Image (cartoon, rainbow, N blue to C red; front, side):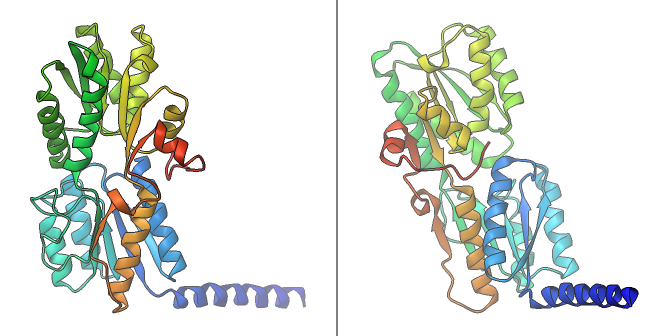
Length: 329
């Protein structure tokens, strides 16, 4: 009798799992630039929340910050035919266009997050015909605002020595940000960009880059970066070199919780937000709308779609005391 009851329970559990699988409306693939990256993880959390809420499943693929690998992953997943929609956080927002064209030709909805796909990184409207949704921030306006804040801080210093820590020069979007930083700062005669380092969106490479820079430059007044993870390493390097980080102007990007805490504590000055969970959820919603034949919002500018202003300073946080970041670091 007990054996029969156990068998019935096992059968019921199997049927329940089967029913759950049948009830799923479809499956969405998320191609992360790198799945170990905190920003990409938070973006995927947004994708997961939206897909689960709308009755879909999701799966993440690790691009390992390798553009060629990510391209082949998209091709392989498309060939497998197991996914109804795709969302990509591109490693090479220009080179990945060919993979998007293949997916679109196959009739599978596909969206991009963080960056538009195509040669014009400041154009959110589709540059590849048929892209379902672009949920992104044009790099130049945000980078311009960041550099202008640094220049304003430097107004009473002559010279004002600035270090730039960019993600990596192999990425088109980071090159565009760097060009924008340098162009804005070049318009201020008192501002000297003394060094440019690569942080690779992680604290350890940023620590090493900043340590090397400080060995060659003894008087630094500001650090301009596009990623909060960079400032984690920068702060350690500054302290090791005898600086009080709060005495410098430090600006990052991403609005990670570590940055929000540092700004509230007066250690850092600003972060340019990207709101990854919101971005992932919005992109997933539109891809699913396309799958279901519903109206689609094809362009979502994350500079205005987030819960608060994108350029976050202590003043913005004072006006939004309950704001909680969408990712840790």
